Image 1 (cartoon, helix red, strand yellow):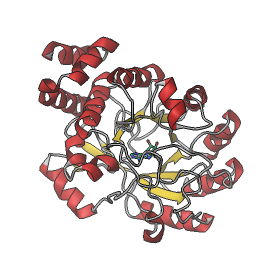
Image 2 (cartoon, helix red, strand yellow):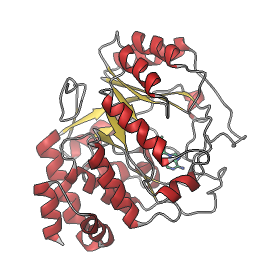
Image 3 (tube, protein in one colour):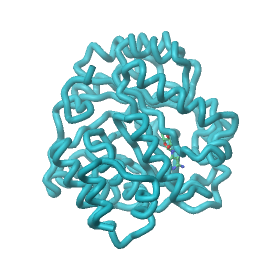
Length: 340
Ligand code: 5AD
C-alpha cells in the first residue's frame, strides 16, 4: 500500500482502482497524510493563503437536497446585500490585509452579469484577486464577468456520479455542471471545483472518479468537505459525512495535483475542532474566513453550526504547525499573478 502512495507522490497519477484501494484502507492514513503534507510543502511552500469570503445573497433558484439555503426551505430569512454593502465589506477585507475577495451567493438572478461586472470593476481597484462562487451561468455571462476582472471561479462538481447528481440536484444535470467548468477554464479563470463527501449512496468508486475528474479538468483549486446534515432539508435523517474520508480525498488530490490551492474547509472544522488543522497537515494550504456582516451570517446556513475563523487563534495555530499567513495573492503554484 505504501508503494501506491509513493507512486502517487512521484508520478502524480494513479489508476481508479489504486485510488479506491487507498481510500478503502485506513491503515495507510498517516503515511498518506504525511506524503500529501510533503508535496504541499515542496510545491506550495509553508504559506497559507487567506481568502475573505463575502456571502452577498442567500437567495437561490436551486433546490439541492443537502443545502440549507435551498429554494424550498421557507425557514430561512432571505437577504441580498446592496452593491454599497458588498463594496464596504470588500474594502474592509482589503484593508485588513486580505489579498483575495471571494464573492459567494446562492443562484440569485437579481445579480445579472452586468450588475456583477460593475461590482467587480470597483473591487478590482483594490489590490486583490477576485473569486466568484455564484453557480451556473452561460458562457456569455462568465465572459462578461471575466472581462470585468474576475480572476477565479469556484463551482464544485459535488459528485461525478450521474445518478446521484440527479437525485441530489433536482432540475440540474451533471452535463451542464461540466459544461460550466470547461467554459470557465476556457475563459482563463483559475477554476475551482470539488466534492461533498458522504452524500447518501455515494460510493468510494465515485469518489475516485471525482478525483480523476479534477485531474482531467486540470482544476486550479479543489474544495472538499464532509456533508453536514441540515435539519430543514430532505436529508435531515441521514448521517454526516466522514471527516477522515474527506481528508483522505483531499490528501490524494494534493498528490495528484501537486501545485493547486486546496482549502481546509469550514465544514471540516465544524465536524471536529481539529478538523481544519488536520486538513492543513494533509495537503491543504488555504483558509476562507467569512467577513460577511454578523446579521447575515446566521441566514447563510448551508449547514448547521458553521464555525467562523478566530484570527488570532488561527495565527497561533498556524505558527504551531510551522506555517505562516501569506501576503501574496496566492494563485496556483503560490504565485503572485495568474498563469497566462
Ligand atoms: N454540508 C456540507 N457542505 C455543504 N454544501 C452545501 N450544503 C452542504 C452541507 N449540508 C457545500 C456544497 C457547495 C458549497 C458552497 O457548500 O458543496 O458547493
